[in-house]
Image (cartoon, rainbow, N blue to C red; front, side, top):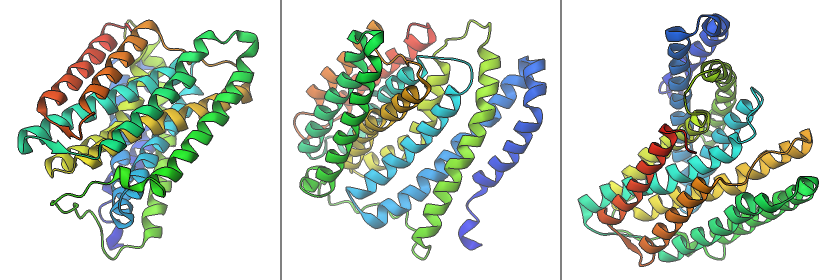
Length: 358
C-alpha cells in the first residue's frame, strides 16, 4: 500500500469518472455553466492521470537510462494521445480531428516545449549543449514522415486513397521500427550527451517495475473511460457555438504534452538539454509515426477516408517551424534567443486557433 499513497490523482479521477457518467446527460440537457464546469473537471482529471502515467514512465526511464528512458516517456505520452483521439473520433463526425491533433502536437512539442525549455535553460546556464546528431536525425525523419503522412495525401485521388493508406501505414511502421533499432543500438550515442550534472532521481528505489507498468496500463484505460465523457460534453458544447472547431484537437495535444512540459523544463534547468531535445523532437516523431498509422488503420477498417492533408495555414506554420528548428539546432548549442524564436511561433499558433483559422 505504501507504493500507492501517491496515486491520489488516479483515485480522484475514478470518483470524477463516476460523477461524469451520472451527470453527463443532465449537463448536456442543461448546458451552460453545468456543462462547461463538468467538462473542466473531467479535463483536469485526465491531465492529473496523465501526470501519473508520466511519473511511472519517468521512474522506469531513470532505471533503464538513455536513450531507452526517453523512448519510454515518449511512448507513454503517445499512448495517452492515441486513446483520447480514438475515443473522440467515435463521437460526432470530425474528419479533420486526427490531422489537427497531430499538427497541434507538433506545435506544442517543437515550438512550445523546446522553445520554453531553451529559454529557461539559456537564462540559467547561458548556452546549453546537446548532441547535434540527434537533432539532425529527428528533423530528417520528421520531414519525411510528415511529407508522407500529411503532404502527399493532398494529391491522392479519392478512388485510390485506400492503396496509399496501406502504403503509408506500412512505411511509417517500418520507419519507426528502423529508427527505434538505430536509436537504441547502432546509433545510440547520437541521443546521449555527457554532462557534469547528475540525472534527477525520480526513482522509487524499492518499487518493482511490474507495479509501475501495471499502474501505467491501468491509468491509460482510465484515460479512455474519462475521454468518453469528455467526448459527449465537447460535442454538446461545440454544437451550434462559435467556438473554434480545433478545440478538441488542441485539448488532446495539451493533455499529451502537459507532463512532457514539466519533464523538459526540469531537464533544461539542470543543464540536460539532450533530454529536452529527445523529448520534444522524439514526441513529435512518435506522434507522426505512431498516431497517424493507427488513425489510417481505423479509416481502412471503417472504409471512410480521414482528411490528413494539411491546410495552407498549417503547411505554412510547419514550414516556418522546420526552417527555425533547422537553423537553431545546427551547432550543438542552444540559448534563450533561439528559444524565443520558437515560442513566438507557438504564440502565433495559439492566435490562429483563437481566430478559427486552423
